[in-house]
Image 1 (tube, rainbow, N blue to C red):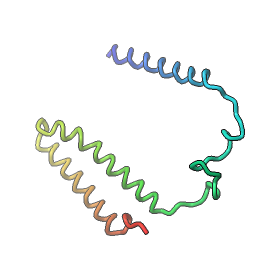
Image 2 (image 1 turned 90 degrees about the vertical axis):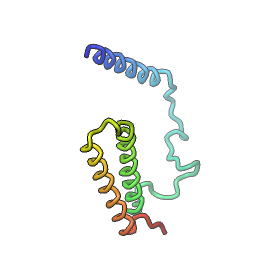
Image 3 (image 1 turned 90 degrees about the horizontal axis):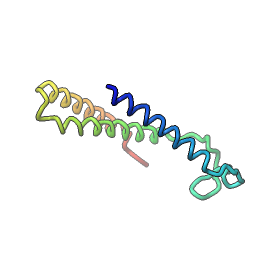
Length: 114
């Protein structure tokens, strides 16, 4: 327990020191190019507060959901031979729910792009 506390203290001090050092060492001179809006090397074409199509958000949410699914699958696959049968079937139910959600999104047309 003491080693964990020491590690927490040292890492907090080190990260705070490096953050402050990078702020002190970096020159803080502002010029017109640094404070101007930037959009892929061009001047902005339109207002930055324009609305986006909801499909962008749906695709982002789907990506997050299936990205998190993979983050649960890796540890599960590593300890699969040590898990009781309950751990196996819990993950199978989780995967079935995700598959049903994916089929629902596909059926609703969230994956269609025009």
